[in-house]
Image (cartoon, rainbow, N blue to C red; front, side, top):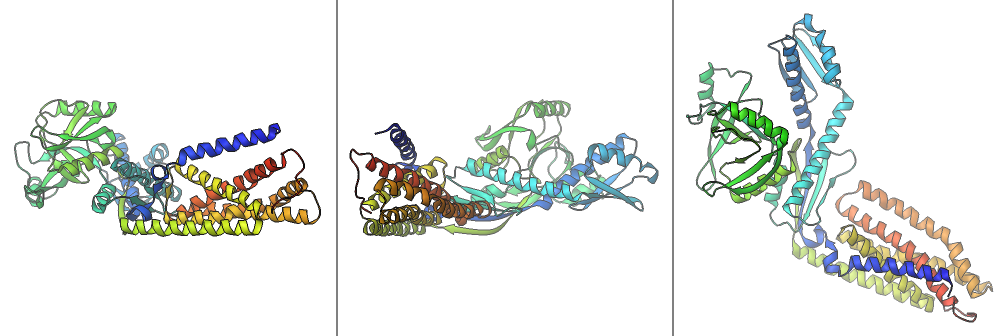
Amino acid sequence: MNRNLILRGLLVLVVVGTCSFWAFPLADKIQLGLDLRGGIHLLLEVLTDDALRAEAQKDIDSLVQELDEKGVSGVTGATESPVRFRLTGVPPDRDELLPDILEETMPYWTWRRTGEDVIFDRRPDEVNNIREQAINQALQTIRNRVDEFGVAEPVIQRQGLGSNRLVVQLPGVDDPERVKNLIKNTAFLEFRLGVYPPAAGVPAVDTQEILSQYGGTLPDHLEIVPQDERDADGNVIGQVYYALEKRPVITGRDLKTARAGLGQFQEPVVNFSLTHEGAQIFEDWTGANIGNPLAIVLDGRVQSAPTVEGRISDSGIIRGQFTQQEVEDLATVLRSGALPAGIEYLEQRAVGPSLGQDSIEQGTRAFGYGIALVLVAMLVVYRGSGINAMVALGLNFVLVFGVLAYFGAALTLPGIAGLILTIGMAVDANVLVFERIREELHNGRTVKASVVSGFGKAWSSILDANLTTLIAAIFLINFGTGAIRGFAVTLTVGILASVFTAVFNSRLLFDLLLSRSGRVERLSI
């Protein structure tokens, strides 16, 4: 046996052995998708206008502060749309300040004066960038939250290029409402100075009580924020109100970590620690505000408003009327970061495990029938050489399952359909080669010459057929979602494995036969 055959044989053994190690036992290595295991399917829409408004408000605050530092005080701003805001109070003779400020800090805005006001419009290219960033950040944040929730093999992806819709498939989840709340919770955390009621007082029962303390009009730097009142069972029974400084001391972006824990009276709380920069800011602020109320605001609602009793450095506690599950979920969303925009649920579907088991049984039955019929056909048509195709087919599935297991791909019902199609793709190359070999034998060539010529002449047809299918599968992976993508992934892996086994392994088996001592005069084909 020549050196070339030995090296090729070792390569096949290494590849097949590695894939076998990855794939078996199948029950432990191959994850089942949503349609086979059961779970929930969600279609979400990222409200990217929220991100644009938030960015516009940040720019308003920055611009007002810049003008104040340059001697233009009393300027106020308000958003008119997600991509436009209006400044009031800028004297016309100070317009020359605006181009320099915008060029230095906000070059993505254009401005024009309209009477006493100045209108700012965000440039279209920057609008697209913010929308794209919001979608990508929402995708990553949701993925982080789902990973912390412990869902095996989730599918979290955009519904297509350029879309602001996200597809979320969570196999094995049986509590959809909890998952929906976990995903949708914006989890925007702020620590803000409480102005009303005073430290020793109680919250206001309505907003008019607070407004009466300020002559009916709230100062621009303050905001009324509600807090839910709950009974002993945690049910909301009413609301109370606080007047808080709009500018937060620190936000959730300053958190380093958060985890569920128990408070002084064994109540569920969230323990948090701050980044170095956040800890320094918080320590300075709490040291200067001992005796003042500090409101902990989550998603625009006060969770608690304790009085600062001493300097707080790099860690603290978030208290509220939480259940243990709410505390665990809150810690999860705080660790994963805040969503950049709101989320709207467009569709929800639940798949029961009984339906999944029925799909597994039917898919397995179809898979078995397909293999059996193909093997019988190959043996009838190509006789002994059909065994070559059977070996190649068996190795093909070892490679497919090994690659799927290695990359952690979940097997779905369309994926099973892709495997069944792979059966045909796997033997298709063998058919092309075998027909070429038979044609050469009929023309009177020797067995060895016919095998060499058969593989050589069939290669272009094999490459063409598989390449065109592979291109279509790649497009389905990039543009498809859910079931379509599961089918395309399995088909892609199957095509690559088919080419390897049909051309490389089949040729190796023929060469091993021809390498025996003596000349091979006949070939069972």
